[in-house]
Length: 61
Image (tube, rainbow, N blue to C red; front, side, top):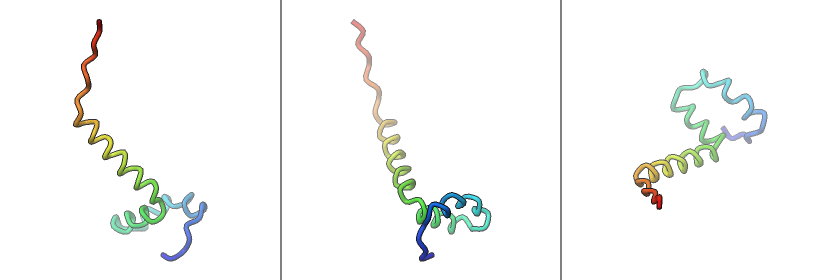
């Protein structure tokens, strides 16, 4: 897989999921959509942080 990733390849990428094993598919996802993977990791870490924090009580005076 030394070819350049193009818009056309990305457009039809998900139609070929059934042709690959899960390990190969994960590799291809990372290779073709690295920003998506990075964003997912950030979102997960932010959710973990917010889940750990307790909401502040509202003062109604």
